[in-house]
Each structure stands twice: as C-alpha cells, then as structure tokens.
Length: 311
Image 1 (tube, rainbow, N blue to C red):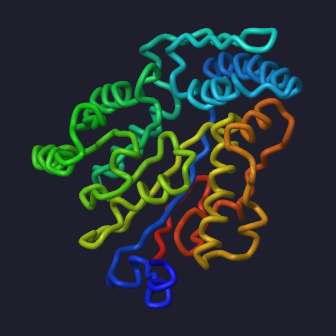
Image 2 (cartoon, helix red, strand yellow; image 1 turned 135 degrees about the horizontal axis):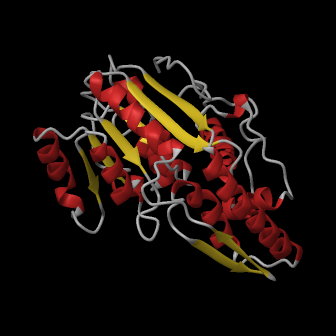
C-alpha cells in the first residue's frame, strides 16, 4: 500500500493543525552532590570504571548493561547497598542512611513546590521501579514535604483505566504524579500536568519525545515546562549528552535542525557507548549546541531562568 498511499499523504505536526497552543520549553539542570554522597559514589564509580575497562579490553559485553545501569541509577539510590562483580574485580557501594535526602531529591521537592504554588501540577518520570524503586521513594519524599503525591505503576492500573485513574486523583487534589514514562508515552493526554520532570531519562528518543509531550496537547492552556535533572560529572550527564545527540539526529530526519544532526548520530549501542564513557575509552563532553531536544531547535539550558518559546 505504501507506493499508493505515500504520494497522497501529508505529514503534519501538532503545532501545524492546532492553533493557539501555549509555549513549550525544555531545560537541563546539572546538580552537584553533597560531599558524603560524592565520596561514596565516586569510589564506587572508580571501581565500575576499572571493571568496564577490563571487560572492553577483553571484548566482553555480557556485564556492560549491569555496569552502566549501576553507574546511572546508583546516584539516585544511595541508601541501597550495591555490589557488581565483573572481570577480575568487584565494585561495591557503601550505602548512606535511608533517611538521607540527597541533592536531586531536595531539588525535586523545591521545584515541585514552586510549580504547585503557581497552580501547576507536576509529572515526574523515573526509570527505577523494581529494586531501586524510585516511585515509592519519591512519593514518600514528596509527601514528607507536604505535597499531595501519588505513583502510577503498570501492574496496578490497566491501560484502559489509566486516564480515568489519573482524572480521579486530580479531582481529589493530586499535585505530583510519579511514574515510568512508557506507560503513558502514547494515547494519554495529560494536560492537567503542565510541568514535566525527567528525574531519570529514557534512552529511547521516541519514548522521551512522546512522553515529554503528553502535556503539550490540544486543550492545554498553560505553558509546558520540561526539566531534565542529572548529577554533574557522573554517567547521568554522559547519558543525557548521548540522548541529546540522538534527539538531534531524529529531528534532522524530520526536517528539523538539519545542521550537524546526522553527524552527531551514534551508530553504537547506547549501552556500549556509555560503558566506554565509564571506562574512559571515549570522552563524552556536554556541548551546548547538541542539546536541542525541544521541537524547532529550542536550546536546552544547564540551569537558570526558564524561557518558554513558541513552536
């Protein structure tokens, strides 16, 4: 059917068929760790780097996924003991007290309070939902700060009931919703949540772009703000840089931001690329010009004042 249909088809964006959409803006905040947090994590990351270096030197990839996930998720779960056994060595994290609220958690609470005070509900995307359960943790942290927060899990609410479940919670005063992005990446309009926080980003550019725009739909009346949080100098920063390059290439293929887009596209598997970054085999630098995740090339910013832009 493609040869018959494509000549008769036109591909349009939401902004081209829906007039009057509010501004959409994205930004990045790179945070520094507290001294005790940094000391524990950097020692662990050094051991991970040694394991990744040995594995890559031997051409072994079977542990790279575990090494990368530990490097990315452990900064957000410092209260959990972590032990990774690799090629000729062990990486072990000495956990911090469970009651410790690290810098990213504190920033999330601060950001959520700011947005709620402005009459804006907040959507928080996480990746850890099992052993490093960020949903339960962040709901506890947010409620502790006096915010009305709840978590949505794929196994507790069926897809056909999720929109009604969210609407019911919103009607009861819900202010912050914590969830995995893949359970709402398509099909749901979340216009009640004009602020979106990527507490932990998704590797898939498709998932990231779809989930980021759940709030920027027809019927939205408020500017949509999307914030990416990451720890500076960790594998989280390298992961965001990799995702940004992939997003530029994706936009270039759609006729957006053509300059340099395909040049930046990585052919490597994301896990392998991040393992190399962890091992020091490649240098992943944060480049301001590669952070054009927003539609139409609106630049992402490390931090500071948010400037919504149209398009």
